[in-house]
Amino acid sequence: MDKELIIKTSPTEVEIALLEGSKLVEIHRQKTNNTSTVGDIFLGSIKKLMPGLNAAFMDIGHRKDAFLHYTDLGPQIKSLTKYTNSVMKGSYNSPLLEHFVMEPDNPKTGKIDQVFDKNTYVLVQVLKEPISTKGPRLSCELTLPGRYVVLTPFSEIVAVSKKISTADERKRLKVLVESIKPKNFGVIVRTAAEGKKVADLHNDIKELEEKWKEMFSKLKQTKSPDKILSEIDKTSTILRDILSDNFNRITVDDKDMYTSIKEFLTSIAPDKVRILQQYKGQRPIFDHFDISRQIKASFGKTSTMASGAYVVIEHTEAMHVIDVNSGPKMQRKDQEEAAMAVNLEAAEEIARQLRLRDIGGLIIIDFIDMRTSENKTSLFNKMRDFMEGDRAQHTILPLSKFGLMQITRQRTRPEVNIDTTEVCPSCQGSGKVNASILVIDNIQRDIEYIIDSRPKSKFRLTVNQFVYSYLKAGFPSIQMKWYAKYKKWISLSSDSDYHLFEYKFYDEADDEIRLS
Image (cartoon, rainbow, N blue to C red; front, side, top):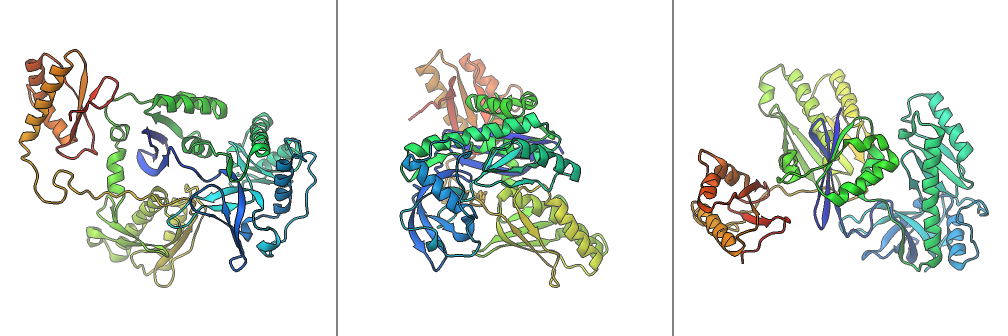
C-alpha cells in the first residue's frame, strides 16, 4: 500500500500526517518548544524515594517530577551509576566503554532504596511523555536508535527483530553485528536491516557511537538536571522508523524543514530523496491533500463508515470503550451475515482510529453479537491483521462469552484529541450574526483601503471555502468585477479553518495585513 507523509509547519507547531492509500491513519503534533520527548536522555537526580511504590521521583528539569520504577532500572543500573559518577568526577576519560569495568547485574527483585540514595545522579531516558497530571516516565535502560540497529550500552547481547522473515537472515545479521559491535555495547537489529550489507550496519553503528561520544562530552561539563542527548525531531523519527519502499511521496510546506529533511534522507536513504517535495501552493497544505476534511470526519465521539454503520468511542479514566452500531445495513441480509459484515468493517475502522488518535491503555470493544464460533474466530484473526501495521506494542484477546474484545495498546504520549465541534465565532453562541449580505461589502471596503494605502503592492485575500466559491462563481465573477473596477487582480485563497464571515489579507511575504 502506497504511503505518503504530509508535513504542515507553523511558528509554534509541526503537524505530520501519515496517509496510506490516501487515507489518514496517523497524525502527529510536535510543539517547537517541547522540553521532553520520548527518547530524550537526561542527567537527573533522585528527589524523593518511595519504598512503598518501589519507585523514585526524579528532577530532570520538567515542571513535574519524573517517575522511575524499580522494574525500569534494568540489570545494568550499577554500571550506569558508576559510569555517570566516574565521568562527572573526571576519573573515566574514554569516550567509549572499551576500558570500562562492568559491575554485577542488579537483581530483578529488590528495593529501590537499596540502589539509590537521595540526590544520586543518574542518566535516564524518557519512556512516556507527561500525560494529564502525571510527569514523564523514565527508564535507566538506555537505547540509542538508528536506522538499522539500536545500541544498548553496558550490555553484550545481540538480538535480532522477530519480524525478519527467515531464520537464515536472522543468523546472518547476528553474525555480522557480533563482528563489528563495540565492546560493552549490545545491539538490537531492526526489521529495516533485512537484506542490508555489513557496510550499512557498520555506518549505522558508527553514527550511534558518535552520539555516545557527544553524551560523554556533555556529561563531563554538565550539572543536574540537564538534557544530555535529544532525540531527533518528530519528523525525522517517523522517517527513520517507518520509511520503506512503499513510500511514494513526502511533502512539506516549509523551505527550512524541506532542507532539513533532505539532509536527513541523504544520510539514511539517499534513494528516497527523489520522493521529497516542497509544497508551494496558496491553499493550506492540509486542505490541498484533503487532510483537514478527514480530521474533522475522523475525530469526535462518533465515526461513521461508508456503509452507514458507525462506532462510538468513549473515554473513561480507566479505559476506552468502543461500541459498534449497524445503522441501516442490518436490514439487507441474514442477521448473522449482516452482523459479520458490519463487524469486519468496524474492526478495520477501529484499528485505524487507535493509530490515528494514538489511544493507549485498555480498550474494550462491544461488537454486534454473533452466534457462530467460526465468525467470532474470523473476526479475531481479521482484527490482528488490521492491527499488524500498528507500530505501538499491543495485545488482542479473542471475543469473550459476552461478545467483548479486549485490547491493550502501548501508551507513550497523550492521546491525540482534536475537538471537531465549533462554537460560532461570529455570534459567540448568541445565535445572532451580522447580516451575511454585508460580508462582500466589508471585503470590498477593505480592498479599497489597501489599494489606496499601498497602490503598488500585491496582496492576497483568504476567505472561507464557501465565500471563495461565491467570489469565483459565474461570468463575470465578483473577482473579475474587482479587476475591472480597480485595475488590479486580487488573488484569492481559501482556508477551511476560517468561519463563514472571516477573511484576512496577506502581502507578498505572506505576512498578514492588519486593518485595525
